[in-house]
Length: 131
Figure 1 (cartoon, one colour):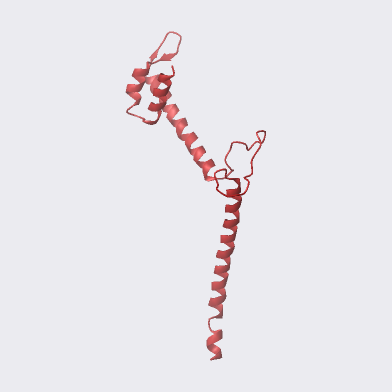
Figure 2 (cartoon, rainbow, N blue to C red):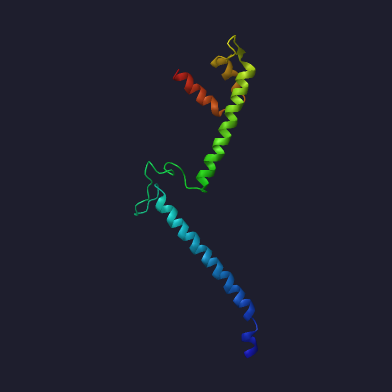
């Protein structure tokens, strides 16, 4: 009977080691989440959120390494590509004047660009509205 008690000792200690590591990982994640929520201005918590001052270099910027920061970087790259494509279309479709500048009417640009991108068309329409 004594043998059956000591038979699975190795497996039990291995199991407890795994559970212990999971518990430590959970506690670490939980602590990080509490800190994040304290800094989140949209959090419903009763705690006062930490605010950065206008002179602080991190003012108006998402936390470094956050998903928000990555989405911003991705959007910046995407819009940059859209703008490059728009400039290329203007150069290829527009008319080069004597002063070296390429000119195109809004209608010509809109008619050509509407089939390529539906995102900047709204911006172009808004630009036309405001002159």
